[in-house]
Length: 208
Image 1 (cartoon, rainbow, N blue to C red):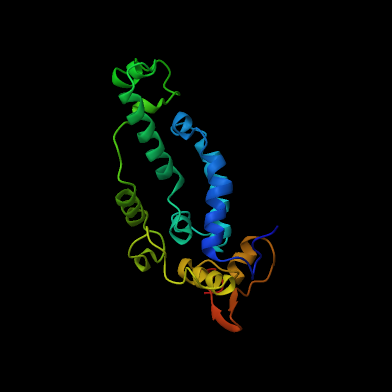
Image 2: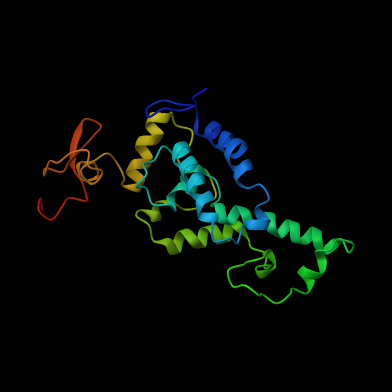
């Protein structure tokens, strides 16, 4: 059953719960084992796509905005607590063969390998999330007081929620974006939103 379309869909909270139950549960399976791998970006790409659906944003939306609007922690930060929990459990069980590797890590033979004991420092997810968003310096980040809470409008209907987020992120179906995506060849890059023309902030130098 389809949960969402371009102008209609289930509530944002329903989409968030569905994403966590169906997508994140599978994507984070055994995450402590591979969380430091160089290939985690391939998993993150799919999770970012899931967050775009729940936040009703475009593909060009800056990545730091996606977790904020979806109210789902960034993938890397979500994997860290799972690793910390596993390490804590290992330390408490003396009979587990892996405990010596955690307490007395062996020498790293291959630089391409990144075992979980390379990063055993616990992290406060909320504080790190706030710090990462602040340092990212994305457009309109000043509109977010706290990325860890539901943003204003989270309970709006799908169409209004989509429109609000496109204003927040300044990413919309404007003339500049349509030309970039090769959907039009026109040199007149004028935005049309809510039946009211407005000039896109990314007008080309030729138009300026």
